[in-house]
Image (cartoon, rainbow, N blue to C red):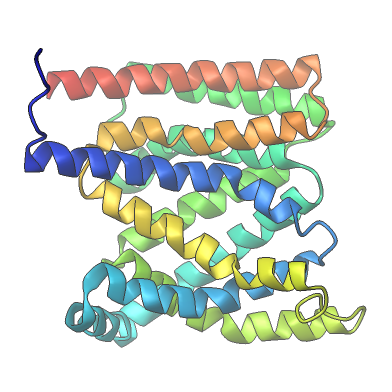
Length: 303
């Protein structure tokens, strides 16, 4: 009887990295289900509590991922005036992104959120061409054209342009571009961004209290879910960072379709409208993603 040889250290690390990255996208894909458990909580409080609980979660993650000495060193680098300025801008953008996402999910519009993240990898090609002078291939141009037609079809299905989905996609891509100019570890960046947003989060809580009592501290279930919001934000980030260092960009590029697929299925099973025109819209975008994935794999094989 033959047995498989033991994994080499490199094979073992790649497998662990793939599992970690896939786990991160899986958690992000199931995030709507987590948020839907707080359907009765005001969206402003959900957003504010997510920011506040991100502070301790990211602080712990910072040292878990980098070690004690490197964690403090990275934090010192992030707090330098120029870097702090960049992270303040990125914090503002990710706050808008989180706010739009939470609002869409709690309003029962998960499919629009999924649309944004299906568009994200395709539109990132346009960002690369416009801002980083990257070259574009013919399959990528076809993917962009199909995505554009998909957005138009989605607009017809909704009776108007899918502004919220486009805003969600735009803020995520803007965040990626800004963070590319702030080379600090992911958890360190999240910690500083969360600290910057604390005054806004506190203001949101006071605003919410003017119309109704806060859910946090009331029913134990909502209190626990709100307190775990920081962990739910930091944990997949840690897993993604661990995986991104150990697997190829090609694997990451293909794995990123996992999250919007799970979000789409969540919206579908939740009974959100899925008309023929909406099916056409997603069909065009999925066709664009097939060209995008094919081009990614072809370039990886040539390399």
